[in-house]
Length: 161
Image (cartoon, rainbow, N blue to C red):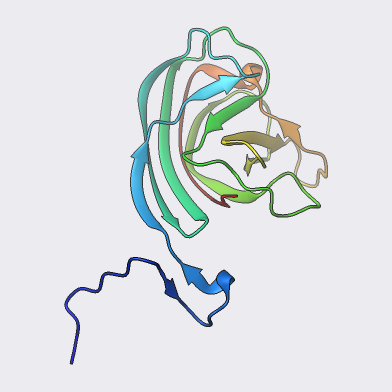
């Protein structure tokens, strides 16, 4: 026989009966990401902004587009909100996931590589770059590193707490 639909109220164990094998959460949704610079967002205006996510257990995968038509007057590190708080799972690093850009326009700093860092114990995605091909140092992207208008599409994956 076959099932048309199967509804489980308490979850399902995959690959074993231990608590780490229990899948008890699956969710798809949308959220509206926002950007801040040094924690502030004075005068930031958006031309396009939308985000979608899939959450399976603690694993969250997000895809978003953010168009900024005016970056405003706040200063400091650029950070974008994520739909769920980032877990603190790896003790040797504060970066608890990874992401990649599909498109980015409006970066004004000389850069070789851009990167995204879901930051532990926050709901923030930090932006950074390396300036040279073989550089081992990373730099935080700030309001001075982007044009007045900025546009990006990106995907990021991370684990919740």
